[in-house]
Image (tube, rainbow over all chains, first blue to last red; front, side, top):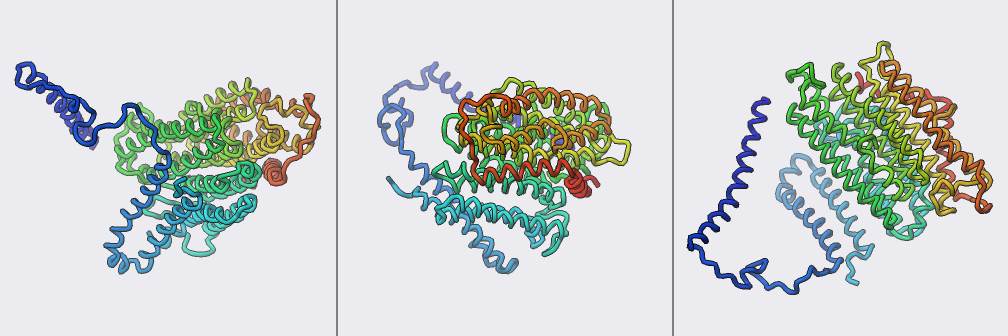
Length: 131
Length: 497
């Protein structure tokens, strides 16, 4: 049993080895290709940008962003998780209610109540107002 | 989940309900004093549910464990439920005035205390390592927010230190849990004991193999953070000094008690066989000695009261560990449970003592605005009542009869002698003498120093009430120690069986 336990670490070591070898190998092949003039080197401003695709970056300094987004992000996470949990429950409600009766509904109502208190809290503490 | 499980969990569920109710009531109640009293009143709910399990009045509470064996509501857990609820009620009453001065987030302060206590209630009744870990995190997160509650530099630093170091301690604890799981294939405390017996044992190594030894050391290190035991003590003075004083009182009593409870439970349930008991007894004996010496030596030169109490709490964690180290396996007579019983008595007594001292200091610093020892100068003249209350608390910390501090030290040291740890008892007694130096400095400031201004200090009624209740506890349980000792004995019956 102990032997099996340590053998399972061998898989991990292989994984780490692959994770190290693959990216270094790719960079190495690319570099060697440029030595034998297979890979062209035509650098442009856009190619040197942090993100080659998408919008051109505005400004160069790390900029301040509005702290109030933080409240929205927090509330979003709370309600997102709520939905994630509600969805499978709603799909399986028929089965659950046959097995557990009203408790299947009651458990979710308690859960919704707790989340709602959180929502009311944010509302009362004026976290939703954009001052 | 069955109805039985719900009954076993009823104190924790009630406590969560109380915390949510307080958040809700905060919207409508503008007088925060009323809100605090409401919270204390609502604490009767979890208390009633705990009493119900103890006496078995309503519902099916006979199950030995619930939620697939991860929760147990035995008398050991209930003993700590009563203790924690008592501490919480005292802390909330004592911080009424403090809460009023906050001007905002008063309701949140109470709700965070209640949520942290929910975690502690769960922690003392958990009987499975992952549940223990989750409960521990539930305890630590609100506590970190509370430590940063004053939002000045010191307080934020305290909160940050607390959360980072508690995260590190949690990581260490989890690592230990992983090793235990790797060796035994289970996280259930009772099952761990059975599986450990099946493993091949190398008798030259403590705990039978290096893996288990490593795991136990890691788990103990994770909890040593909460217990404030050397070498995981470095957060204590900074956090106590920086955080609001009621929070420091709360951390030093409730948090510590729950951590000791879970350590005693893990050790006696999972590593309860005679050989293993002797192995971890040696580990705790060394930690106890180191904590006592370190805490007392560093407390000698402190001038800030809260910092001094921080180092004093490290030393007291050492005295309590003496009881844990005095394992049943090493005793010759029938006093098999004297060690853990002594620790439980010590925890209860220390809770009363420390609450008395902290709340007397809150009452004083509400007027003087300072936490230095020199701010106590002439307190005997400025407020005779507070002077007496604080003195009783301090001499109980020092361990002078007839206070509970003396009785609890006597119980744990005699347990140590009975289980062959004479050297540890000697270190403990010597340390008690050393601690007299800094504790008596407080008493000297109260009665023998001249005050800078002679204005009288009058304390607010709630904080005075909380201090008085704690001091009455100090005197009562010092005079009749068997009240708690018998309760602890009853609580331990199942755990040690």
